[in-house]
Structures are given as C-alpha cells and as structure tokens.
Image (cartoon, rainbow, N blue to C red):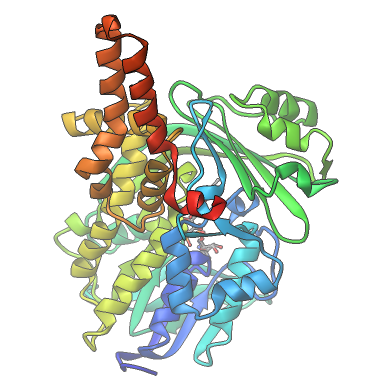
Amino acid sequence: MGNHVGNRAVVLGGSMAGLLAARVLSDSFAEVFIVDRDQLLGVTTARRGVPQGRHVHGLLARGQQILEELFPGFTAGTTAAGVPTGDLGELRWFFNGRRLQPATTGLICVSADRPVLESHVRDRVAALPNVTFVEQTDIVALVTTPDRSRVTGVRVHRQTGDSADETIEADLVVDATGRGSRTPAWLEELGYARPEEDRVRIDLTYTTRHYRLPDESILNGDLSINPVSTPSHRRGAFFSRIENGRSILSLTGVLGDAAPTDPAGFMAWVRSLPVPDVYDVIRDAEPLDDPVSFRYPASIRRRYERLERFPERFVVVGDAACSFNPVYGQGMTVAALEALTLRDHLSKGAPPEPLSFQQDVAGVIDVPWDISAGGDLSFPEVEGERPPQVQIANAYMSRLQVAATHDATVTRTFMRVAGLVDSPQELMDPGMMFRVLGSDLLGAILQAHPELGEEAQGLAVGILMGQDRDPAMAAAAA
Ligand SMILES: Cc1cc2nc3c(=O)[nH]c(=O)nc-3n(C[C@H](O)[C@H](O)[C@H](O)COP(=O)(O)OP(=O)(O)OC[C@H]3O[C@@H](n4cnc5c(N)ncnc54)[C@H](O)[C@@H]3O)c2cc1C
C-alpha cells in the first residue's frame, strides 16, 4: 500500500465508476469493500444493475489511457483476449450524411462489448489483495455519527439467506451507484439540502442487436461505422466489430424517435439511416439476439459542489454525480478521470474533504458536460438556455464537421478533443479556424465574384485539396 489514509473504504456500486474508485482506494486503505446488488465476479454478460450494458459502449481515448495507467498492460490483455482495437480517427464516422476524412490519431479505440470491458477491469481489481467484493447485497442507507456530521458506514441487506440488515463500517464511503443514486434523498433524510440538478432533455432511445457477419471483409478493415445523429440527420447508429467474431449495432433515435424492437421494424429503421453503409453490412448477417431498447430521457448533472454542508467521509462519483447523453461516449472516461481526482486527494494522506473533492469533480465534468449538453442544444427542440457562446460553439462545430469531411487534420484535432485527450481550445487555434472557416470564406468570395473565372476557381480547389492530405496517411501511402 502506498500512502495510508485509513483502514477501510467502502464503495457503493461495482460498475465502472466503483471499480476505478476501488483501484485507487486500494493504494491508501488497508481494505476496500465493493458492495453491489448483482453478482459480479465471473460475469461477462449484461446484468440487471447495469441495463445499459446491452448497448454500444465506446471507450474514449482518455479513458483508454487512464485504464492503461491504472492497470499496466490493460490494452494488451484485452487484445490477447480477442477484443479488437483500432485508431479512433480511422473509424468510419459520418456527420450529416458525409464521411469524415480518416486521420491517424495514435488514439486507441478498444472495441469490446460493455460487460466484457467491465469484466476485464473487474478482473484486475479483483486481483488486488486488499479488495473484497460484497455481491448480491442491497445498499439500504448510510450510517452516520449521532450528530449526522460524519458517515461511518453503510447499512446493507444480503440477498442470500434471510439475514437482517447489517452495517459495514468504513473510514470513507464512495457512492458509485449510478444515475439512480439515492444520495439526494439520503442527504435530505439526514437534514442536509438536496443538490441542485441541471437537466437537458433529449428523449433518446437506443435499440440494439448483436450480429455475426458471414464475412468481415465486407467492412474493408474498418472497426466501426458511425453515422452520428445531428439536427439535420437525426437518426444515428453505432456499429462495431467486437470480440469473438461478433458485432453490435445500436440505433439511436432522439426527441421521441425510437427504432422498433421487432426485427422487421428494426431493419426498416436501419434502411432509413442517412447512409447505406450499416444496412449494407448487416443485411446478410446472422442476428444473435432480438433487438432490445433503452430509453434515456435526459442528461442530469447533480451540483454537489454548490452545497454548503455535506457529511464528512462521503463522496459521490460517476453517473451518480453526472449522467451524460450517452451518444458522446463520455461516462466511463469521466469516471476514470474522477478516479484520478480521488487519487490526488488521497495523496494528501487524509480522506478527501467532501466539498473540495466535489468541486474538483465538477472541474472534471465541466468540459464533457459543455460538449454533450451544449451539443444537444443544437437541436432546436431541446429546452435550455442558449447563451451566445453556446450558439457560436454549435455553429462553429457544424462548420468543423463539414471541414473534417475533406481535411484529415481537422478530423484528428476533433477526435482528440471529443476523446477528452486535448482541450477544446485546440479547436479554436488560429490554424484550425482557418481550416474550418477558410473554405467557407473562399467559397463565399468565389460566389460573390464569378468574374474571377475558372483559373481562380482551380486555384481555390487546389488550396482546399491541399488540406485534404493527412501527412501521416500521405507518408504511409508513399
Ligand atoms: C444506453 C447507454 C449507452 C452508453 N454508452 C456509453 C459509451 O459509449 N461510453 C461511455 O463511456 N459511457 C456510456 N454510457 C454511460 C456508462 O454506462 C456509465 O457512465 C458507466 O457505466 C459508469 O457508470 P457508474 O459506474 O457510475 O454507474 P452504473 O454503471 O449505472 O452502475 C451502478 C452500479 O451500482 C449498483 N447499484 C445501484 N444501486 C444499488 C443498490 N441500492 N444496492 C446495491 N447496488 C446498487 C448497480 O448494480 C451497478 O453495478 C452509456 C449509458 C447508456 C444509458
């Protein structure tokens, strides 16, 4: 153990956020308990406590990097177990029905079914000698000191046998029970204020089916095909090759639109996507299950950092703190970033001071929330304030998506920012702005001055084509 902070930490919820928190806690506590209502160990299929696990889960590049840092050799381990990987910028991305120019980013996409990815993380956590899984156990309530100023443990009920509730004592309790977290209600019961909530209603539905392709060469080597939902082309999909020769297809409908779960209706919806690529790949594929759907009404951000009082020895992470519109693929990566924040706090040699920790967690959430909640506001029907910076950012992003259809450098920068590796400031760098807006300006000049003639037009096309070439790909081709 690195830096001793306490005897026992208890993590509520053993999904991605709970596992990653447990990993860093294991360096600072003599023992770490992970409590979950489900059986976890050995499970590689979707489970009741994580129903979203049936649907496509992309791991953003920053998430992959953190998994590698917390579990050295993680990616090699998943690859050895048959999980395909690829370069994030070389996937088949479509925005507004147009394909982004592929770009070599050096960022790794680990393409696993969600329960399989979780099982790889869980196996690494389970191998830590001081971590114990308390499975098939319902979390009932927090236990506090009589004055309710400090959390001292958690009351649980084991599903096996007819035992009464029992208390697990702890020096620190971490809530990682996901979007349905009871912390707001617990705080109220203990005499604290509930956190304010920011909500962005998107009324999204995922409908998902697994397939086996008769011949994977139909993909031309691509790992995934992703026509992304945008205001002008609302129906979206994520198709990915995953482990064991299987593929997964999640269809995404927004603002009440939803792909049906009957096979014929599902297929008809696939045909209605803005590009034929997904249909072409699955029409002769063998379905491995029936379509299932998951409704996601709204993104929710709980503003714990704004509370004036909070019980000691208790913190909140993962979807329990913020649940993002899943199409941006941020939840697991934000959970990983929050685990690093927890590690920073523990490095001070004491349990985290809760409000200071939640303020730092809010700092982690800010950028991904601006990307996803801000992006949702580009749909005119989504309710919410649109300050000028959101309007400008959305207008700029739609130009950027056009520029990325012919400029691999734009694709690369976009992928690094969307992957939470680089700051959004990179998109506003003067060179990027020229790449994004320059073609529009050139087009506007040519339109306004038809007298410039063919020679000038040829010159303009040459300049734009110059942007086409991704240096890394050009070098590879040479
Ligand atoms: C349709 C969909 C698609 C998504 N796609 C992506 C994606 O592409 N990329 C990405 O990064 N993220 C994605 N997400 C988000 C991702 O699923 C979560 O961010 C991620 O699982 C981390 O969540 P968590 O660990 O905080 O909570 P959860 O995964 O919700 O897990 C909560 C855990 O707590 C346990 N639990 C809850 N209450 C109790 C209780 N009372 N007693 C005992 N145990 C309890 C549950 O059993 C569960 O194990 C998606 C989400 C949805 C809905």
